[in-house]
Figure 1 (cartoon, rainbow, N blue to C red):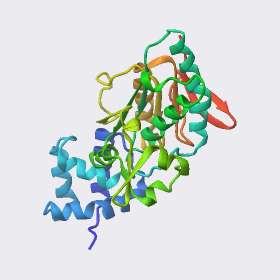
Figure 2 (tube, one colour; figure 1 turned 180 degrees about the vertical axis):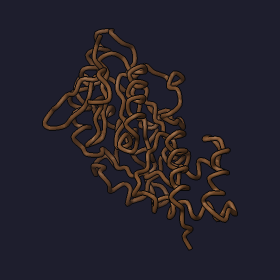
Figure 3 (cartoon, helix red, strand yellow; figure 1 turned 60 degrees about the horizontal axis):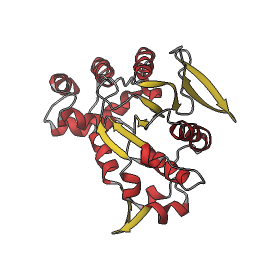
Figure 4 (spheres, rainbow, N blue to C red; figure 1 turned 90 degrees about the vertical axis):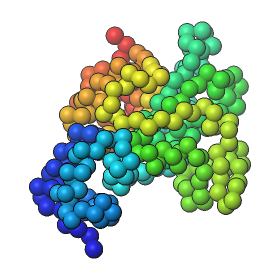
Length: 283
């Protein structure tokens, strides 16, 4: 039987999750905590959400206990080349700029951050885009590329690092000819090839934590379909933090319906064929 969470208990949990992770649960998401955390409450042998809250409040955000809560409440919805058009802009418009810059000796590396990588489809899609670019005349980016893939969920990150996907996952946005090119079949699953994997470093990371320890500054950041879960206050903090770890002129790709406008004046909005993305202004 699902436990019931009182209004005051929900308010306490909502404040704690916002403070620790930046996630803001709307008032109408009370049922989400009830359904997704009831099992953990019982496993912890707590008789109420209030008792469970007291345990949660004293736990480190990096502890296995707190991670189980994060894994329960986060939605790791993802697919390959999500929304397609942003990846077309990335491959067709952005990568050639960095190819020219590297060829001219203006920079030695291309650093990309997939800042909410979930189960890995986004960073692997980024890496495959770069390998596809290298298959074109004059393409030579993979040797200079470093991709950092992070997520707050230890469970999602473990799946990403494993790089194994079932037929259902493979059918979600992945071009058919990429399967034989970048994957190896193994025990009714598909394993991502080392040619893709070697471009990526995986790291567990909470976007509320200081970003100084990441291997930036980054040329490109993908932060797609996660900002929508954050409060306006944290959005302003987050975009300000991103500005500090990006190179001037660097590109920021957000999810559909997400925007840096109104939260930061550091980014200029770009529009190509109705697809919005952002570029850090050069001061």
